Amino acid sequence: MKKIFIKLARLLGYEIIDQNNFISPTLNKELNDDLSIINEKSIVLPLGDVNITKKVNSLLIILRMNTEVEIWDQNKKRLFEQPKIEYSIRSINSLIKSIKFCHDKYPLIKIKTVIIEDHSKKENLDKIKKLIQHQNIEIISLNHEKYKPLIKEQKSLETFSNLASLLLSFEVGKNQGDDLIFFVEDDYIHFETMLDEMIASYERIASQIKKDVIMCPSDYPYLYMNNEKTNILIGSKRHWRTIKKSLCTFMTSKNLLNKYWDNFYKTCIDRHDPFEKYINEIYENEICISPIKSLSLHLANINSSYGLAPFIDYKKIWEDNE
Image (cartoon, rainbow, N blue to C red; front, side):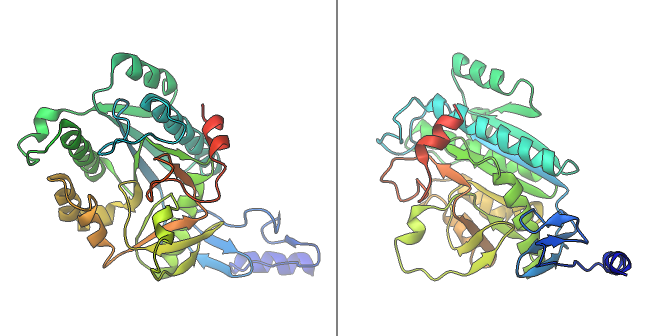
């Protein structure tokens, strides 16, 4: 009778929890295991399941890389005070690890990666090419001349270059993206589970609230420096909080990129204050969330309010991605 009941529950789409033996007979898993099924249902104890309506079939990762500029628009040193190429290498290495972890777990989700390369020295570019030689990663070189008629004259070449690379990344996302697009900069080091948790949490949260969301992978210190109200949501393996501003590393849907294309475009044609002014305007109508605790570490100066996420072993994640 027990076996018949389990089979019937499976056919009806229900899951059985055996709290005495700490297993789910319908899933053939222990309750400590990941009980969710990507593109079908998200299960978090003791909250039950969420049927997935916002399914993810593909992810386009667009990484902006500049191996020469230490910290744009600042005269400060990053944590560990290494040459910028060291941050780029560790960032890409951590991203490769996260892609592999995600692909091994969700082999049916197509993941493509593009690097927007901004005039690196040959020796630095050679190091990057060696690092990615066996990966499905394409490098696109930034053409400054293409964007000179579009971007207003800036005080420095570094600022112009930053705006141009950002515009190119948005254009690549608009032209090549499908379901989700992850815009990321090369001074973030990611935990191995980062992509897995972002995709699974996106499916759960977007399906639950019935709309696309924007996700940041980092838990920035500025989020705790005022009395800003926030809502807490449950993702696949951690809490997420709603936020009203972000930097330029975030994951969004192709639908939202198209819907707010004017905001993304206007971000790139001039240096605004704050830089992300028009991106932050999107959050007046759409939901943006960041994880608690962080899935990525922004390696800025140790005193930057937009930098190091709290409660992270900074030295370990740095050394693990050498």
